Structures are given as structure tokens and as C-alpha cells.
Image (cartoon, rainbow over all chains, first blue to last red):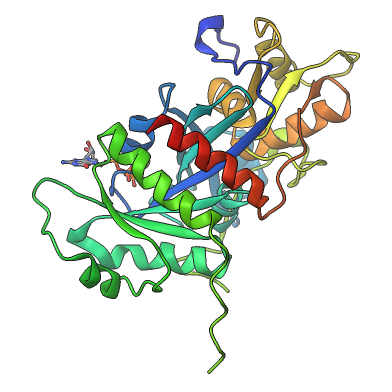
Length: 202
Length: 118
Ligand SMILES: Nc1nc2c(ncn2[C@@H]2O[C@H](COP(=O)(O)OP(=O)(O)OP(=O)(O)O)[C@@H](O)[C@H]2O)c(=O)[nH]1
Ligand SMILES: [Mg+2]
């Protein structure tokens, strides 16, 4: 399948850029990850599609049209130029994390993760927090303030999410550039702080 | 660990990359690549499409993710294609991929850069 590509559709980074960096925007289904990426990205967010199949599918099925065993996981991302040499990529994780290798592709080499959460379903965040902890990816949490979502004091949210004392917890509006930028700064400040002392083993 | 709600029966179909599951070099989705001068011989159709993307680049670069998104290739397969093209000297990366845990100096540079935007 060859489709004509207009050259303008591809947005090249200048030759001066020598260093990419990556932050992952994680969170449960529909917490505002794509909205967040779109708010801070300098280019319209792009979308990749990773097809996945059931291991039990026969090889013949792979070459045919996508059947009922094939699904696609969409991954969207954006970028921010930080000076002439550095470009920061923001990757939104899929809300569903049933497929671990894809999750690892996203988080491997990431500076850290910003986990978005919605006060209407805080429990939905536990899976993602557990996964980040299991692979030692440092993270901060930002509550995306939806218009009609209930508001709670941050200490209560911290408790509900079972966050460590050192984990940054903040609020944001995923639709606003300045608010998203501030949440990214909160995460990055945390990342540049010396690691917290190890807890004594019980 | 098995992880929460993992489905161990799910796999990626690697039909386009000869059944390989890992890139030959450490190539990430955010890795930047630029066109280089190598001998274009015996390339598969997908590899040719990747190189053709760079024709109007004027020295500019693309992230592996950009290649996957623009050509509608699976990101996992794109990492492998790009690693192969780097092996053949047709694409080049300005820096090696960050280790699994990036350097503290990179975090500082990102923080300075973000603060400059605020
Ligand atoms: N009121 C309000 N709506 C928001 C906000 N952030 C996102 N939305 C809306 O909520 C819906 C879901 O947002 P998305 O950005 O698509 O969420 P997502 O996390 O990418 O969703 P999945 O990728 O499906 O998991 C969209 O209709 C957004 O327009 C917010 O801060 N306030
Ligand atoms: Mg989304």
C-alpha cells in the first residue's frame, strides 16, 4: 500500500538537536492524557498504532485482513523544543495496560512519568501506579480537574492513592498549556532531587 | 511480576521484520535519526519507505515515533527497521540512546528548559 505523502506532513527537527528526552503521560482510561499532550505539544499530536493479536492465532491469520483476534493499541505523542539542542517527547500511555511489552517500550529510557487521575475514579489509577513502582519508574501525580468532578483536599487524595510522602501530588487542567507545563515542572523538579533514603525493611 | 490485568496471551505480529522481536541497536521510540550516506541495496519496501521520508528533510531529523506515525507502521517494527538502517549506515543518530535510567544531567537540562517556557 503506497500512499503519496506530502512533504509538509512530516515535521523535521533541526539538525542542531542532538538530544531527545522522554516523559510518559500515564493514567487510567479517559483521564485526559491525550488532551494534556495536545495542550503542551508544539506540533499537533501524532498517533502510532501497534497491532496486537492473541498468541493462539495461527500464522495464516497474520497475513490476512485483521480478524477478530487483532486489536490495535493507539499511542499518541507530542514534542516540545527546549532550546536548540534538546527536544522533549511526551508519550501518552494507553488507558489499558493489558499488554506489558508495549508499556515497557514506552517507559524504557523515560525520565519519569506524570500520572493523571480523575477524582471520580481514583481507584482506576492503582494498576498504573503499581506497574510504575514495579519497574522503578519515578512518577508524580496530577489530578486533572474536570468541571463537575468532586474536589477533595490533596492529603485525602494522597491517602486514597496510597502515595509515598515524597511523591509529588498536584492539580492541573489538562486543557491549559500553563497548567500542564507547571505539572511537568513539578515532576522534573522531583526527578532532579536526590533519591529519598531507602525505607528500612520491616 | 505478572502485573495487574495483564493478558499474557497477547503478542505483536512481527510479520514485517522477519520474525525479529528486538532491534539490533538500542533504538527507542524517541530516538532521533538523520539521513546518512550509505549504499541503498537490497532494502525491503518498508525500509525504502522510511528512507524516502527523509528526501525533503534538508538535514532535519525524525524520531522513530514520527516514522511510525507517518508511515502507519507498528512502532515496535519501526524500531527494528531503523536499527537495521543504522547498521547499514543509511541513518545516523546524534547520540546513543539514554540508559534505562537517564542521567541526572539530562533531567537538569529538561528542568531548565521547562522553566524557561513558564
Ligand atoms: N472538563 C474537562 N474535560 C476534559 C479535561 N481533560 C480532558 N477532558 C475531556 O475528557 C475526555 C477524555 O480526554 P482524553 O484526553 O481523550 O483522555 P485520555 O486519557 O487520552 O483517554 P484514553 O486515551 O481513551 O484513555 C475528552 O472528551 C476531553 O475533551 C479537563 O481538564 N476538563
Ligand atoms: Mg488518549
